[in-house]
Image (cartoon, rainbow over all chains, first blue to last red; front, side, top):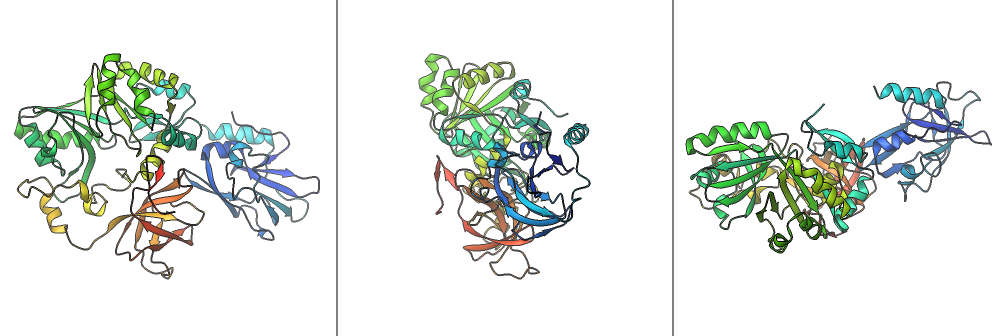
Length: 131
Length: 367
């Protein structure tokens, strides 16, 4: 079973969203996603200052097997890409919810991410996907 | 639900990710594909390749039959046990399959063919064998383990009776011998030293477990693919198929045009194509970050985005040994050394190089 932290929110395209104390959002890919992709070898994170629309392709994660797009879970602006991933893409495999975060964003307005699922919802979604 | 090898339950219990390959359920990896790759380059790994087809041929005219069936010349195999890598062609030169042919005795040869083409191969071989009175027998009762890496032969020899080990370890490259129920060949698909061991399906699980106990790392199709591409070896169905001939697939070296009087299936077509300009299979290595993948289009370095492509990538991956991306691409007239590859709408520079990229753990291309 893949790990699904309680405090995060999730998308159907397997991104997770963490609300940081300063109100910004941190985004990565889930344990399920990294496990399906296998060993990651290349990550392209969005540039700081880029504006994001929900559902838009904003990062690329490539494993030995395949390239996969990452979709923005919110409308907003990128405030930081994870600088460690360029040299160590395997951080996503090793610690998808921690050191393997992809980017941080400032959401437009307070509502950002109305379609996100909580941990229970994502777990149910994964179970449905498996059948 | 696909076909299963005798090791299927062991793979599942080991936590392998199972995928379909040529109609077979096979392990993609058991955990980290990169670690499996490195295990083979640095020490020893093993692959369940029981999906591949073993075909035994028997009859006094077997050598004569194969000299007409295969594009490489089994007439070159003089001492028993010697192996030959060859294409089997259609009349028009299209590649039906690539395979290994072993000379066992004058009336006995063994072929090892690809899983996805096995049915088609058997039909083709069977139809042509009749005129020569050659008996064709598919050995579905046999399994195959590939044990590969610098320490592989020493570890795999432990599967044999003690008295047989010195002879097995003395096998020259591309040679096989039978020890009890095991047919051991010093061949592989990784660019490392090692053995491929053909053995009865029911003995396979115990052999696998003792190799694992000896520290041989189970490796899946994922590592098999990165290893073979680094080693500059083609994959049937990706780098060539029936619509491609050997000369445009990097396999011209496997076609024996000499002696001129040997008439093999596809010869006339290849004679016409020989020396003509046409597509060639080239090696590519990427200098930038990013990963080359099959079907990405390849252009001249500064060609316009609506310009005509030189060709496309047939196999591409991240090379764990070189820590950069490598590929095979089928290209028309590339001046080289630089080309530009379209990766998701963006152009990236890649350099044309001569495969293999890696052999025996070391880079063979300038980095």
